[in-house]
Amino acid sequence: MYIRHQADALDALAQILDLPERRQQIVQCTIKIMLCLDAEPRTLLTDCQALLIEDGLDALRRRRQDVLVQQETIPIVILDPEGDRLFEAAATALDALRLTDVVRRVFPDLRHERWIVARALLSHEAEIRAQVAAAIKDRVQSDVFRCALGSVKSILAGVHPMWIDRAGTLRAACLDVLKGASLADPDDLHREADLLFELVALSDERAAALLVALDREPEDAVRQIARLYEALDAVRSLASAPASPAQKDRDAA
Image: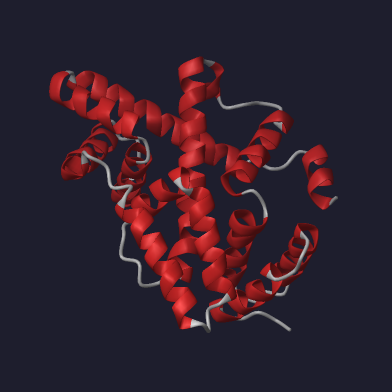
């Protein structure tokens, strides 16, 4: 049966999650993805497979490392220790932001910003995964769904950062640097600044360092933001790079 809508995808996933073995779950999820007629349910099932059936962020990290190994050239930014750390931080942040879509689709009543949900995934991934799976498997049982939603809301309430009252300052700094240095296309400027802010906001250490620099050393703040954007570009370049023949063979297997 073809999958046309998000509801169809969630119904299929509920049946898949009831299968006793993970290998069976992966096989059946892959089949259901191929039966999707539209991008929305296909993306949802793909991300659900990554978050709920595979190993979530760890699986995405291993996949990225495999791609790096197979590349004939690697992003320049990761050739020094600081750049390598920033690259991995940006990549992990993008993975978490991507998987927030699963949480927000399963629990459409959530009104938290995407970066708050991503912070919860980074710090409470196992708990979030368990509640999302429970909600999908028992969507018709309102008590189970409400309990899962309440648990997720409680987790989200606990990951708001101490510096949240200065979030606007961080957003504005990201926009100012991208605009001032002409790092982003004018049509994409605000979207890119919002994404860059999210990368900052997912790390309290990074956010605190940037706030200190903004207060004391504006030039260092510009360097931090520009360097993080460089790492973000490197991650996106890697994601869009064509797979090597060896990687294609492994994916096919």
